[in-house]
Image (cartoon, rainbow, N blue to C red; front, side, top):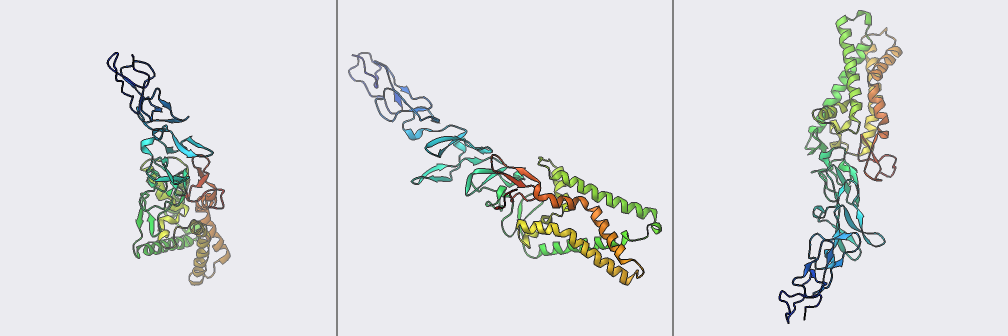
Length: 363
């Protein structure tokens, strides 16, 4: 008599027919071996006559699966509870390959743990929004990984890891370095003194009698004005969402000083990294420069040129500065409206301050 389905025997007419082990099955009579369950099926009992199909959308990572929990979501999908358990397509800019899923647990109903999809390099998710990836303005800020994974010393609670942790400042290379003691105040004081000196010299030069200036001095002044204007125009290019390559990327980073970028002065170490503070500082540069120039012109009239028309010289000096830095002033005013897109429906971020979402007053 032949062995029944669910058993096997290599000897024809055998009186003993062993049962198929878990993970295998035989649906015929008198088979010599049991068949291994194929990918996407399992058998959790002995003497199985057929392998059980995994639920819709699920598969197995290997043959001969022995239990239903071996059924997992296929690559490119992940398990999620909506109305029912189902395999959901992986969000854009995230990886759902089984072996790459993070070990961080995603707690759902009754303490059941399921792994998160992971962000691809150049993107990051917030700890409380693990399925919403945000594009990082600098790829080096976001190595990719589980929720809240950022480069060292960057704040994981900020969109796109856009800010350093408290008491750290952003370096030219995009990293975050400890503020240290005292040095940052010296940098700010030095830059302020240099700016005041430059504006003072400009206030004197712009009000000099043009007919009495040498041709060489006139050429120098015009050349400096054109250079500053060219730098500001180049800075506009740096606001584009283009993956600039070195050395262009480093050059554009340095040119942001022409757009009154306070980060280059390490203001994070003195006034903190609050977005509203940085924006106010950028907007305040032009009116503060105008007030300073007015004071310089008043002192110049009092000590050097008492017969000069104060009103004309003040307007002339302030107008000259605003003419030279018109592009920077205009670009700074428009900065809240220059944004780049995040994947999916995750909105847009300000290009000048990626930690702030555009058209979202709550952030």
